[in-house]
Image (cartoon, rainbow, N blue to C red; front, side, top):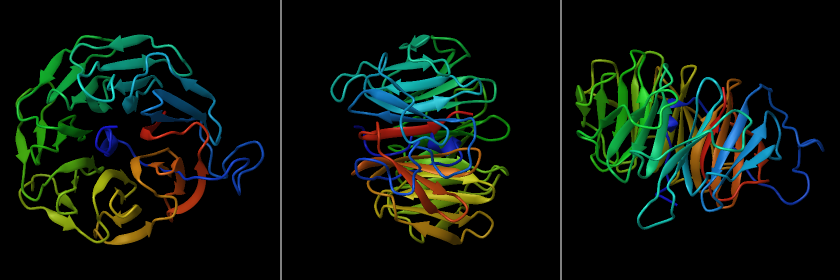
Length: 338
């Protein structure tokens, strides 16, 4: 599996899960339902070495379906506003890759479209407000952009892209790219291939980013163990979060709080975005984490790889609500449908 880290994770809101023995999980009713607020959403987890994607109906701990057709070492997931699922496939575990993005209708097991042109090592994906798909190709140091329904890229960004690992958008639709090898975040106006900003101050091996409702930028730095915080139009004078940060791999901004998933100390922590003070932290249910996402009700989902599982947390207090293990094996990505 590619180096542990997030997949378009900075553009989502929140998510997490945990593990149990065979039979029913303690605290989970016999029907396999979770005691969390229910929505009509679907939870998806990508199992890298098993080469499949498992789907869970809202509040369930047993997969409603397992997608295998068109899946080969999946490493990133995205869902558009219509519920279509996008799976970024590395194609091979190592060596020369045979990468694709497979697209599935909501509830479908067969791909309706397979994108191969311009795709090589799809480490992260994101979808903008107009339905365009953005793919961060870690193998080619490019961002390829596809119009809704298209299989050929309409635009390819390669200027100042080095090891792209996370994507995000501000309220104006500008694209932000976390370049792990470049030690910076590059910013591109919609439809442009040259960056208007290159954010370097305070950034070292960025693995994730997030933008809040006021367009404040948060960057997770694996080297230096910090979260750097940039107010709009102040990209050269960041504030820093250091308390409890150790190899951060995923960031989520939701309702005035910033959630940080750290691989180095197996924690999920919450910080008040106004003061940057830590307001909560948990290590329960976090073990070799790989990804984080959230649903509209504010439940957090975290995928873990040792042992494999998905831990579900209440974002209000980071209490571990439940753990999903059925169908989960070395998960590399997680997302929730709208």
